[in-house]
Image 1 (spheres, rainbow, N blue to C red):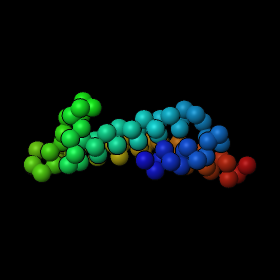
Image 2: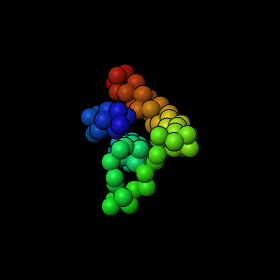
Image 3: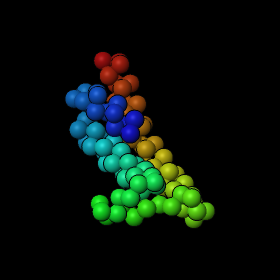
Image 4: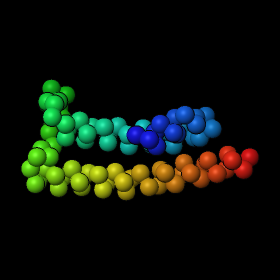
Length: 88
């Protein structure tokens, strides 16, 4: 979420593609967080992640690792953009 927040705040100084890519990641993170919450989002088509079970914990941890992997290049693009802006 923070990548999207910062990319959005820096728009139009950063590319719309970067803002959009950060938004997609933030959306996916939020969806998994909603699925792992104690609330029922079944009406929205979201299958719960039962973090109270060992299998659910492993699944949630796997999602978090995937998000970290997806965030790394976005973070790098945002940092590089900021460095260019600071040199301008």
